[in-house]
Image (cartoon, rainbow, N blue to C red; front, side, top):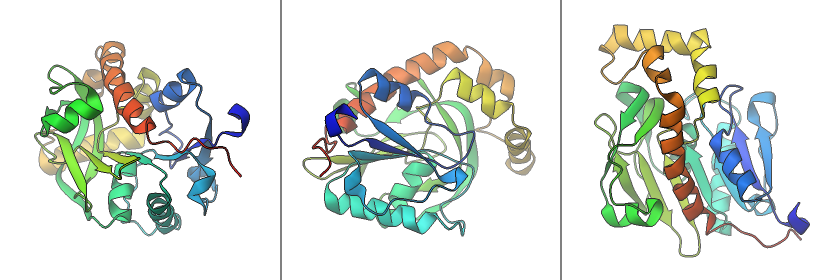
Length: 254
């Protein structure tokens, strides 16, 4: 792999929640990676120094569920933080990062499902991570019922009308961790696959019955202009990933 360069570890927790655009981004930059299928029983590695960085994807479960891999994943994140290995988390992954570093993850008053607008809460940090001080006009894809508080040292820079913390960075000097509540890794194929799953659609209907669904869209709206929407979002995702990449541990494995 790239002359012995360490790969980025991608943790997939559910069969339908793959790495999507994050994998495309890695390939475009010729960065090696290893896909670890937690959903298929792959064990959580013990040593983060085997990897250049750790990427945690989403999933329908909660980080507060009594699943056997939750604590090993949190322990790996803490070890990565101590070893100078950057971590990036998408939705559930952002919640895992927050939980591992000491923040609470709790149920949201309402679920966010579908496309929604975000606003910048820290212009300087948004400029650093996104290259812009505003994300007006760009929608981000959401599918979550939990929300994270901020771990010590974290700074939030994106927010939505229904979820205060949408993106936080933890700067450790030579590297940084990034936790996100949204799914900037979505592709049209991923959106379609989620909407083809009856259990995911049932979650939309249940949320509408329970809370009225103020932040929930139907399948038709989620699929409307899906190619253009994901393209705009992925362009900002690339900027987030490129900033995170600056801290990758690129020395060969020993």
